[in-house]
Image (cartoon, rainbow, N blue to C red; front, side):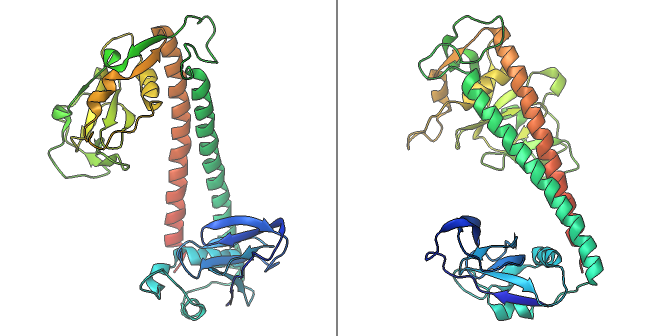
Length: 342
């Protein structure tokens, strides 16, 4: 079914417009090709479980095999087959993951007639195109927000931003964060159970990158969204923060709850201020949350805070919509791969 080809060194080639691929994807472009037929790339060494669809013409390095069809099989369908194979199961090394041509050739799988292959591959490639559109949209919106934040907040040692809403011209005021935010241990919000389930509604927050540990039905001691403004959850170990609405529970004492000390402070605005602080804790500062009260920040009038905060809320909401859509599409693709192949 497959012809398995080895990649080659590209260093003797000149710069050009033909892409070179390695196990991690695109590397650079050269002036020669290894194939003028579309193929599927699979790692020979290193990353062996991330198949690539290689659109001709292309070149591959020696750590990446490229596979073409010896029969009438649809190469796009082969790419889909490669996505459902557990490649790590076929790892032949005790060190750097490795595959051989013989191992790949010996893997048995079920294949329908070419016409059905074509229909299946068209469905999945259409789905992949939609996924890529949403990925690009998320990336573009994130870049737009980053650019706007640079213009909506004053630069270092300046007293007003480059871009402002109409009718706002007063200089921003320098304040210490401790004057506008207070922090507390999350005592009443600590979850007492490890019984998590996605069918529950209350997120359980934890320190670290994952942030949401799971969902609980434990609601004792927590507020409802209608009872309070959102708050900022601060991660004492990663010095990161999250803008969080009620209700929630927390699992780690490393998380601190920051709340505003003045009703005229907009929580979303002050969250963005906090996110812009670049501070690296010293080695002895295991709990450096107490340091934040000393940081100087620039604060405008409450009306301008509200304008900026509401705008950023809407932008975050739009980003979140595309991220949720992207996640649903990924789940749909996973479901279809599991149920449309034997």
